[in-house]
Amino acid sequence: MKILVTGGAGFIGSALIRHLIQDCEHHVLNVDKLTYAGNLESLSSIEGHERYRFYQADIADRELMSRLVNTFEPDAIMNLAAESHVDRSIDGAADFIQTNIVGTFQLLEVARQYWTSLNSDQQSAFRFHHISTDEVYGDLEDDGSLFTESTSYKPSSPYAATKASSDHLVRAWNRTYGLPAIVTNCSNNYGPYHFPEKLIPLMILNALEGRPLPVYGNGLQIRDWLYVEDHARALVRVIEEGKVGETYNIGGNNEVRNIDVVKGICSILEELRPCLPVGVERYVDLIQFVADRPGHDLRYAIDSSKIQSDLGWQPKESFETGLRKTVEWFLENQDWWQRVLDGSYNRERLGISD
Image (cartoon, rainbow, N blue to C red):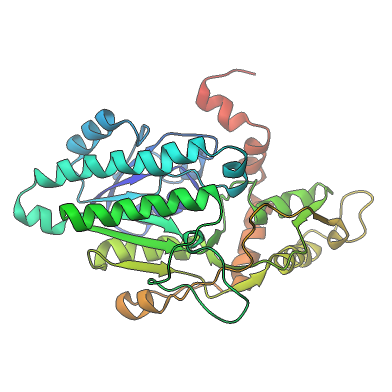
């Protein structure tokens, strides 16, 4: 297929594109606005590949997106373009509303106009795949219950509310206009190329530098962790075999408390990097509990039985194997994350010299 991927320079998007190019035979047009979290260095392994192209654009720019879609003539659009960091959404929601809601609306309109121009066979084959989050469902009690595809939406943060809004738009365009759309909602992703402000990479890099490991509240918040390469495989399975109008929850079957995630990182580092920073006796001694995030959800947990039974997908990584691979990757790829931390990846993108 010819697949247009929005947000393909981000964490999940870049993992998806690497999989599409390296492990599949699809052609990819990557469209990314290249905000702070967009990093083309995450795609260096496939840069220049004959089946891969990149174009810098904002999905909210309907005229430009229309030109790109009509020129590329995709068989599918996979929408991963989003502002996605909860803390940033609390500090300022405007960018989240613009990208996640307005941008999705504009992209849906571009896709609808393109789809209606296709012949009947092409229309039947076309797919609009919207990638979302389990945070739209809100909070779960620690009682063994799980998010299913029919769980009511109850977003807690501005980020989650904007993603919930975009999900509703996609389903409305499917119901009202017949646009062949599919929605997936995933649990917390982690793995290589993860932006350093997120929990797992932040803890790894702070520990390596002997800096505090800040844990919100009491650290007992529970998340279902999904290795990003498992997620990429699931997304491809959905775009290839998923049923129009359906929603598929994608989780890693790995419920872990935040404090145990941090302690697990410390344990792996004790083994792999036993020469601790000056003044640090144990990595775990760096843990510091800080004031909790406003509206912090207690627990997320995904029921992935639908995608497993209907499409035959299962995660390959347990949290233990995936976390070890992630720590090893960050230890072995200092050039990548150092350029993110010092901002040089961003200065080059903006054409700013030192």
